[in-house]
Amino acid sequence: MLQVFNTSVFIMITPAFDLSQDPDYLILGIRVPYTRTSEFDLFIDGTDFKFYAKPYFLRLTLPGRIVEDGRERATFDIDKGLFTLRVPKETSGEHFEGLQMLTSLLAPKGSRSAKPLIQDMSAEACSQSIGEDEVEDEEEFDWQVEQEVYKERSEEELSTLQKYGFGNLRCGVFARLQEELSDVIDIKNPEGTTATERRRARLEAEASAFSPDHYLADFFEDDEIKGLLKFRPWWTKLSPSTEQEGEAAVSFTDDEKEQMRKFSNHSYLLDKTSRYQVWLSLVDILLAYSYEVRSTEGEHNVESPWTIRKLSGTLCWLESYSSLQEVLVSFGRRVLCYPLYRHFLFVFAAIRDTTTILQSGKACVLKCLLDIHKVFRENDPAYILNDLYITDYCIWIQRVKSKKVTALAATLQNASLQKKDLELELEELEKAATVVVEEEEQGTSKTGPISCSDSSASSDSSSDTESSDESQESEAEGQGSSESIERGGGGGGGGGEMTKDNPLQLQPTFTASPIPQEPTRTLFLAERKADSLPSASEGSRQLIQELGKCVAEELRISSPEAERKCSQSSNIAAETEETCSRTLLEPSPQRNPLLIVRTHNDDDEMMMSATSS
Image (cartoon, rainbow, N blue to C red; front, side):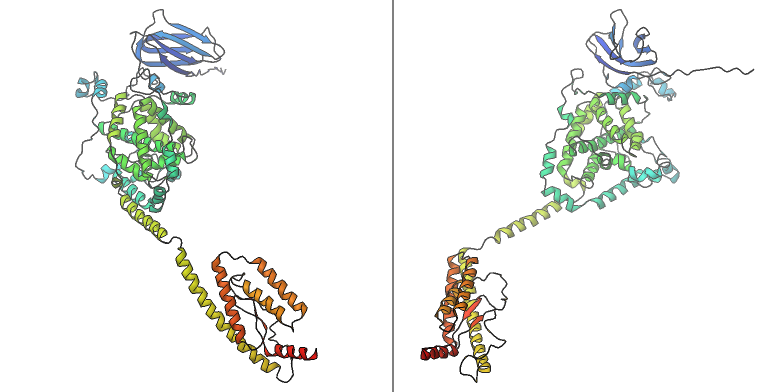
């Protein structure tokens, strides 16, 4: 007979919680909605605290000792599902450090402490096991790393050194993620590339990506950049902390608290060199984050993941730095090669912002890391960088001593960075561009407006030349008219037939300007001569007069100089009349649209009309 046993697996839920304190009490706020008020269990023993309310279970390792002596008080808000507990401190007035570091308060699974599961139990290690962690934390951290002579390694040794990630603890990650490789990092083969080869490839890529035109454009046209430099990020508005001296009061959002509760709490086995590289890479990541926040004025966009990872050599090239100066040089070069705003003042602004973040304490650093974690978490495939670096940094920073963060801030504040350190020939480029700009400005000032004397002299010379040309053209036209008379009217006693060279048929002018510059007085002269011709019909005179009036209305004489030119033109026309032998209405292909001359036929017609009368 087959028997079926029904077994259920009970899953415990870690509730949302936060902690605060006053001089005498530790205050715990635990959110446990939809639970019974009669099923609360508490356990208090020194630094250990346990809370149970089905289906919630919370276990904390506190930074100070608390006691259960009858002074503890608990309240429960049914509407909010909030359980508030006030537990007295064992030592009244003691300050519990790191109550905001929720991940470090959660004890690891299967252990009541956060000590590493694997330890070195040699004789030397055993003799120093007591208080070893305290000594390591208390010792002064020397930021000037010791230098060693480079030793060439064998291929077998090199194959085991291709590691990356937080503390260089990862390897083989990108071998499984070949499709996402190019979208996350710039290095082609991280598994088979040494740290030296990575750095050499990074420098070559930066040199080829640097654009002098883009840099000079931002250097001279920096109005928008100056506006961004005046922006105040959120870390500059923090008030001093009342609990931790020398640090800023940082508050975390509910989403940030929830993310910290999701992190698994564990420690890291790092030697001295690895710890030093972890601190330097932290500065590199914070520099990139500071630039991104300032360039977007605190509002992340779709380019934010790209900007942060592109400006950080740690995230983009899996770089391992050996000095703070290397971090600053790498960041400065990348700022001038890749993002939208490529100005050296932006580099200084990011260094100043990062110094302020570190001076504000590890809580401020943690908030920045959580923001980066959120930016990468919402972008595919940038989330891989969270697994390699950011998640470990969020856990690790909660366990470090605040004085180390302060010491790093002081070192960064005293660091110096100059343009020549970037090895991009910025100073020479700026000097050459400045000389070109000054020469252009001087050339513009030299080619200013022409003086009145120069303009009048040039106008006089041009008018004289035009007058002589028109005189020659008038003489040529007179000779042409005489020849046409000899061909067309040789046999008759007066009025021969019109030929194809009929001067009364108006022809288009060929001047460059649609409005002649000197026709006004010539038109008036033409009107007067048309009135004085006895042989001209009344309709022809009216046509000529109306034509002259219409043209005169469209003309504007702008200066006395133009009037003087017109008077010269009229004098030339008068002189031309005396030299002509026949009166014709002749169109001129030059500036004067109408020109009237006298002919012998008109005189004969006048004599015949006088005889007949």
